[in-house]
Length: 224
Image (cartoon, rainbow, N blue to C red; front, side):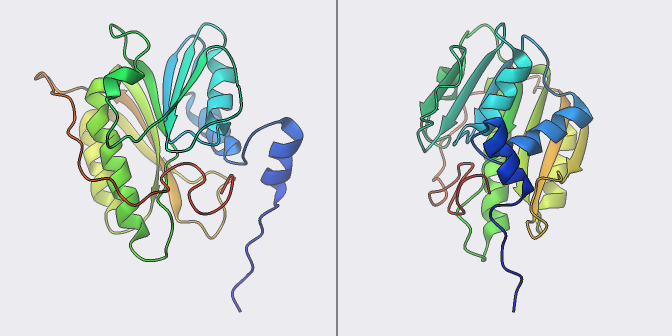
């Protein structure tokens, strides 16, 4: 018999005790501890932000002088802070320029904890597709020298995705945080030193979206 999934593990309990909306907060916290992606005063966008735990962590670090924007198919019902804006929308359809608080200033960091609704078949391919959509949006959203953190399910397309990230970032690494479940195939790509294309980039097209459930919770329950 397969080992039964433990839902209420130490990170779930810790999140409840410390006021985070999901256990996934500790994934970003570890990434921050190791790579110092976020700093005070930064502008940050979180793609697939529900239920809002990454928004909470980002706001703690950027402080009152920074700005955090999140977009997800699901509504974030928790009121985090005055300088945290959340939008209900689809990244395959939404106008990415509408996410910019100031059209003259792009984001310093792009975050993505998106995952498809898991079925056990082809999940890694759907995850890669989400990540590639993130890469399509970077010329509009991310400023030169900026950083990107995005979740992907390891599979056949992961090496090529990592290589493509290496072409547009100065430094790229993969990390599986301690808060990730042992059975999970998720890994986080940490990319720093964005090198935007030299030619003027048109607004990304809107290809057909994958099946619903690309937010932080997906079909797995809060804080998976």
